[in-house]
Image 1 (cartoon, one colour):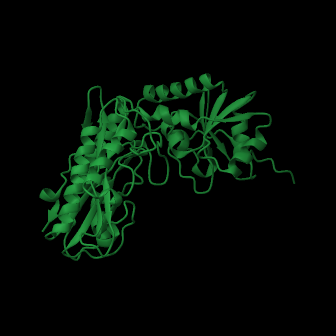
Image 2: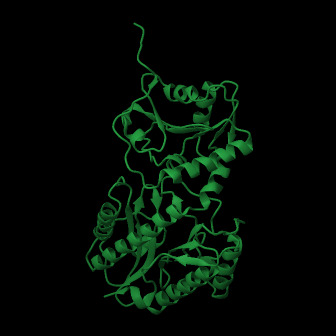
Image 3: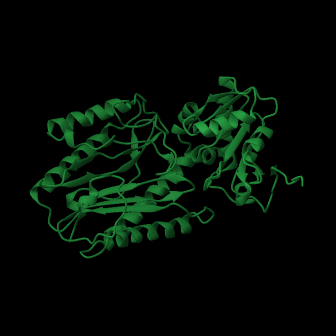
Length: 403
């Protein structure tokens, strides 16, 4: 029997949902992408990453093994999504919507190809497509040259609009609220997971209040204690807190795919001399870094300035990673504006509209006095004359010794 079911179809289902940014803002972003296409001599772009699609359309997908795309040409933008998500992608996107079905393995590629009639050169995100995904796309786009637009699209995302900065600023406020809830929950005998849930619940409740039209997803907390503080991204455990613990507070409210963060060192009980030495030195590194963030500063030079300080303190060998990164559409499982990192190998010059963190960390190995990880993290918005710190939660031993 011949299978007559459609490989892809339009599936409008309900009115458009309110999005976190204005229609004019999404048109600005699409306009910037179209300018890239024109400059590079491309007929269209097929964006496949979560951050690329979310940034340009407002829709943040949940892949669960199925591919998604946003196809953009000079006239239109269309989200291509699997039928399992029904009409939701169309409702949550500043774009048209095309559904593909599971009836055949290559229906996604067929749907994408249907939106590119006559295209000869098409931009893709080379840092996101796997070899298998690239080969599958090429098999449906016969004679079409695929060119990488990911670096250019990333550079466009690095400078934030006024609407983006307003959302990031409110995310920082909510991160501070999560930090307050965590500090209130810290006590001997509490488990890391108990403390983390207090912070997460406080942030999700505030996001629901302040952003009632947004999807609620992906907000999380890493609260670490003792040995578990040695890595910045160590998961929460069921370890019980006890007096004498070094603590690390990390809150991450997620609003419409936008990541913000608060990270602080704390101590339960009375810190010893070695702990205070490392903590205070990291605070000084943090404050030096804050003073170096300004328009015209080069990322590598900011890094070099903090390195010089830590080397003078005999602590450079304890540094864990880069001193900061860009903010925007990103998460711990998607996105990253790698061109804006406070590291030795990044030559990007800061300019107004960029948003970066300052987050030095020292890790002292287990078995040494003061062992553990020390980290402070603030978010700064680069302006015309300096930088605004939008993080308000206090840092340092004077404020974050508990009990």
